[in-house]
Image (cartoon, rainbow, N blue to C red; front, side, top):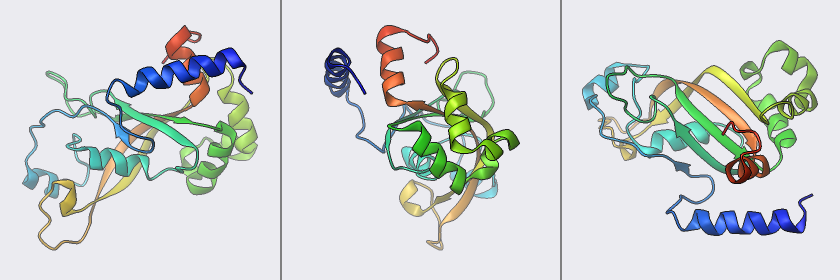
Length: 190
């Protein structure tokens, strides 16, 4: 439970956040720059090298449990085109209300994202592990399939969704821990 001073800090954070043109809950916040891949190259490649629009980012986020998801953002060379760099893994941070409940749902939906120890230990073990250190639990080297339609900015002549695969790394953090780290630098990690 948050104290009244934490609640005041939280309100100040949300007031500050609302002044910087953020995208509402369950939307993906990112800056996407013009990419050098053509539509034809994207259709021919099952593993697309770079992200081209927010719909793809939203599809990645929506492949996870959205109950309790407050905020998501992407970073790194897989999201933002970098000078003289090849396409990289898409890095995503998901801020959730209750990390235990979120991991419980995600373990049911995506058990292959977790290590053997985490699968055996369950959501309680993952929640305990997450509360050590920087309060962030990462899932590296995860392949996700996302469906792309003509509404996503790619010309699909048959109007059926095209599935592409992305390699991602995603981290789960409690919204309260994220805010505390951003405002007070408690963990100096996010």
